[in-house]
Length: 188
Image (cartoon, rainbow, N blue to C red; front, side):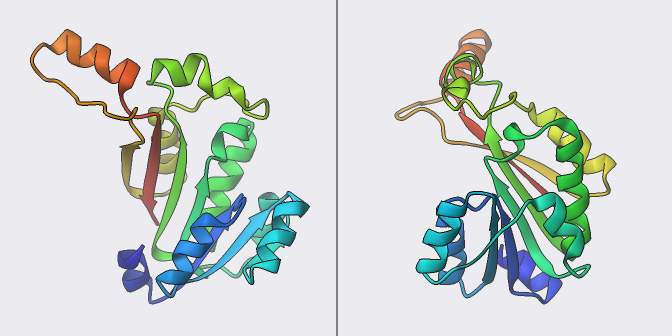
């Protein structure tokens, strides 16, 4: 985040699907002005009561109305798995519009390479549509004009220790105990 602020000269961020505002809180600690957008009127009201700038809006309508190049970062934590493909494209296009040159898009989502996540845990949330493979998210980012696309695995099972002794055991351990989530980080 700090590098994006320095590259763009803007200490502003936008969090799409901000939920309870955990990311907005962290950004405030870093002195980064942040706006949240969420459809849920209850979490919007709770965020506003906590003094956060959160708007009840659909990102598809909100992003195109923002002045081009406004933000150092646009984030969407655990949102892309809820979207149909056309809305996923709209998210990337809208984020690219809203980002300043050098700004970053951050999307975190459940990791479908993790077997328990992809076959069971993912479906605990009935609003999840489908898992989104990292390769697909990377492809969309690149095709929609983002550069320096990086995939960062996160949230392995507690006490998981990767082993490299045997490639088959290492692959098995990664598929069953490895990262439950991943983040895409892409620069405009």
